[in-house]
Length: 586
Ligand SMILES: Cc1ncc(C[n+]2csc(CCOP(=O)(O)OP(=O)(O)O)c2C)c(N)n1
Image (cartoon, rainbow, N blue to C red; front, side, top):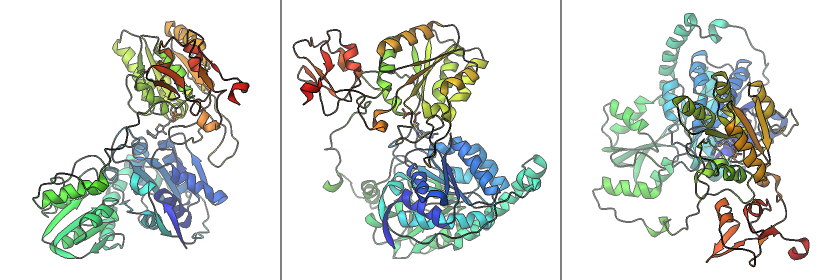
């Protein structure tokens, strides 16, 4: 049966069909929907959101060692967090098939960095498969499970935003019924990489690399499409689709299993064509290796080193290769006529009150990654630095220890706190820091589409569970000053900040109110501005609420956008803003 699936849905389907019974992950665009879709298969597959990617991979290793087939999902930066277990897992190997689905984000549509996960495959010496459409996403997932078990290695299936989020027709199949006995077999020489065994594992890893390279030479996951002998293009992933559109006459070596490198295949393809161009997104991973084989090729000389690849970019590369001038894009690719949409907090977002409160203090704010990153933009301008998940807490501590004169406030989200904020808090308490940490707790992982986390009291599979308390964790870490504020109450926020900033010890403020988008209901009644009372002081505009519009000096609230949080009424000194009465709203 053919169905229209996104790459992420197809990856989930592939995992299901390949007999996966356990799945772990942490949300991150563009990977999130893989696990969300796998969870739809109900009790057939145990699925969970782990607190972070490292935990997810470690849990998956446990499942694999018991003999289960398992997948782990994350975005590219998640693999930075999971890199430690990955590199050792490559040594100890797997029992049940273990596949990491890692989705890269070329062009940084929703990421702090642009990274090429193929580099991790080379570093960890594990195979990587790169589907080029949804059908391949399904097929490669199934193939990856077989490769994993055949070579006892973790396998990475690398997706990218365009693969994960585009839809194409997929022929779906049946689920394999594995009928496995799940039982961990004790064998320390296989499972414990202490130096005595670890050195042997290291050698075995090299041998495994050679056997896998032979398999990569022969696999049908790599295919040669011989057309013109004038030009041969070596490519993989979504770049293959662009190549077919821009160079329809060229011969193509389409790599699906790109590492360990299929050297014989690369050489024999290059021998069949007069010129070789390597077309790959992000790093010149293939090109460097192909050159090291003594094959002359184009690549980075024609294509940009960063950003997402596209048909227009490839058209420009083609013109360069042909020695032609390339002036303008065909009209169908022009995107510069679209109006820009500045990113702002949603109407009613509870994060706004906390950051507005911070505008009243001369402090350094070390922020973090989540919806609240938007506080960096005007009019709030109240985040000064962002590094990585959890970094908002630890950077605050480092600034203080370096001798920064101002007080420092570290701000992280609730999901981020559980992901990697707790250890930073421990650092502050243990090492006698005095910074003020704020957890902006909107009761969800909002940025990636409202996933549950250890604080929400619900699992990915919809079961009720213990809702872990951030306050209790703070106290258990040794923070004595722990308090909770309602971010819609600006006075409460201001009092909490002034008192905690004055304290000579660390404090933890939990700014808590649920995300209205998650709740799917307004915070309160819609507000309006009384034009008779409004003095055009513009104080309300400083909140950066998209519902408050300034139309040629007349400030008004768009009733279609207002979420009724009332924060604007709090900042208005002239009582010009008030809820619309039920009478008026009729
Ligand atoms: C290591 C890593 N994993 C995943 C992500 C994707 N991601 C960005 S922000 C975020 C969490 C946001 O949730 P929260 O901290 O609760 O803040 P909110 O968006 O709800 O305000 C995630 C998972 C990432 N950027 N880095």
